[in-house]
Length: 443
Image (tube, rainbow, N blue to C red; front, side, top):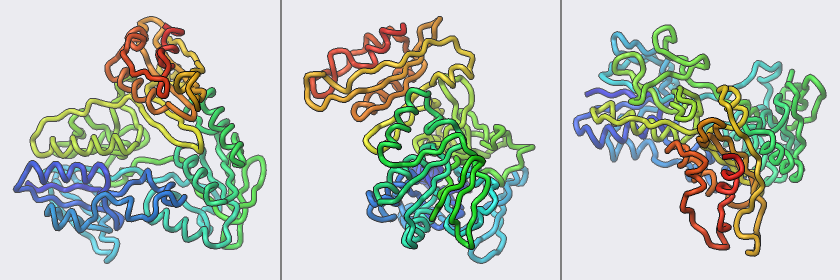
């Protein structure tokens, strides 16, 4: 069986490893547009900040490992530009030689990930303007920071923008965040994002929300960012305006996608075309609470979907069980997390909900270093089902988010959560967990 996998990171190589382990006669060819395989994109801000000592630490397995130990034909700088499902052919260009290539397949996986969005801003071609998605991106930023860079402007206040801002502050840079939304962390409800913005300002970050960037100015190199409201000096700019599925190689009139280009897959990672699969940040994820296909590009989903795609490609029936929308991040001294639906998403789904913001504590009040913990709980007003949690605090957020994610997976009610037998000792919790206390307020 001839397998072709497009993309050499989380989803693609998770699939490749399943295939070589399960099909001893498999011929696996992986086509990576860049030069690095299987690296941790989520670690890039920490590499820039110096917490991760070198880029090698971010690489799970090298290309040589895949070739020499597992027999995978792991090609680099191979950009796929066309997939023909009728002839089962993949076509593209070797970016090193500029020569075309063509490969046939019995089964093909699209695992091309997502590309950073660069809005059509005047002056975006100036030196000193970056995006952050790959190790070479991070290395270019680090190299650029040597050029008397003090004032850094970040465009976008989402996960990458906030994590990068923290790490640049740790590198003694003066950081500004400009976002067209009316607040930082706009993917969270207002109570939670207010704490994010408060922490940003506490750490000296200049916050400019509700502004649209119109142009970058400078003589060869960026020196100014101009918005619809003001202009700002900048020695360097990082655009962190989100990502878009990397699916330009497919014919969207034939392969079904969402409006944003994410390839629609079923539970077995199959597209609507025979023997053509997709997984990871280029594909959809079924959302168990929304009960429909969604797009939430995260490394956890990419690894799971890639593994399941590989199993199904070589004949082992395995279904992806979906997501509940769980994520978490560190922002200076805060941890911010969410799972399920926030109030904004519940409103968009037209659910009849109870929403309550509750301030609990990380552990027993009489034990040292107790910290406040803000929880935003969403539940269905009619059925009593738990629908989502958002949380922010200095301690204990991760524990509550993971308990909540498990409860969502099993479609628990608020009464079910109150009755959970959760661990208690004064250094870790009160006799009533804050999530259980919140559940009693809204059920």
